[in-house]
Image (cartoon, rainbow, N blue to C red; front, side):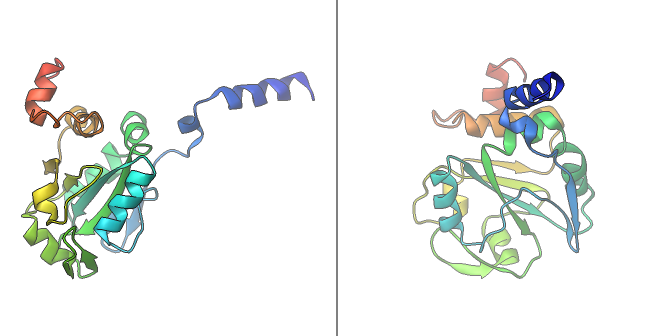
Length: 187
């Protein structure tokens, strides 16, 4: 093997796995935007949670809506930043819901309803809203088992820090996100 090709091969093998993943790019859909790495499942949240946990991932449900400028910014600016996407993608299973959608979804307590009814049940009123869940959830509505929530789009540093808070179980001792962030010196 020529020396240049051998160096290229060794260099490629030395790169972390994340560096070999294609950079994030938003995907335009009929209802707005998504990411090609978001989970496409059957919207059975207990099953999605079990699969995420088995894969060593945390589950997050993203609510957005057509025409939402903040949702567009989240998809086209925040989630394509290498630092943000590089942290979230290997640690979280992201399930996307439409605030006004009619697809059937199963909540953690087994109740089946349309996405819009789930949004009302969970008191989601702003978009984007991201709801985070523990590795295991009791058979109760998602609103009762969530561990953190983003209401509306945060600036990039806080957006990333919220995912870090959930990944680090910053909520486990009862510390809320703002206090956790302040304790880390970034508040």
